[in-house]
Amino acid sequence: CGKKISARYPFIEALTGLVSVLLYLKYGVGPEWFIFFAFSSALLVLAAIDVDHRILPDPITLNGIWIGVLASVYVAQPSPLVSKIFLALGFEVANPRIIALIASLFGAFVGGGLLWAVAEVYLRWRKIEGLGFGDVKMMAMVGAFLGAPLALLTLMIGSVLGSIIGLIFIRLGGKDRQYELPFGTFLSAAAIISVLYGETLVRLYVDHLIRPA
Image (cartoon, rainbow, N blue to C red):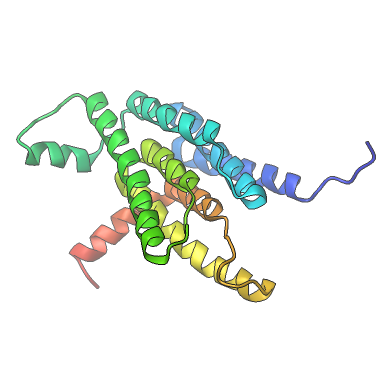
């Protein structure tokens, strides 16, 4: 058609390739690689859409919730948090798929529920909407795939990225503090970081608390 190709397209393609290589280095070629590559690709799509349109489409986020639950049950990764909760309640569950199911559902509830609570408090306090419900559904998807601890880590990293990058953009772009930032984009980046390095970061944090320097 004779039109120039935006630099954004090769950038996203290169970023997708980089993420796929990093996932390969972590998981090798197997079910985990395919699952988390699909998850990360969906996050990159959400990030780009949120930058352009300030929306996070339901076909990705809502479908991502139940796909995340099914994928978590299929992989059945151990969940120390859920195992400890069962033991505290007096139950001993040995089936890893049941533990994975509860961990995924709990992650979706924590990821989406916590962000919804923050948005609701902000709305009642400031009388304006601070977060869209799309962010809530996206975090429920993240929690379904990653579980509650990594969903919380995603929220923390996303908030830090949003604060730092957002303030720089507002200052350099001459925007006021009411400017709507694409929070879903920062959450997407944070979720990918959590996929790749979240377990290590959580372990370092816990070890630091137990054995402070």
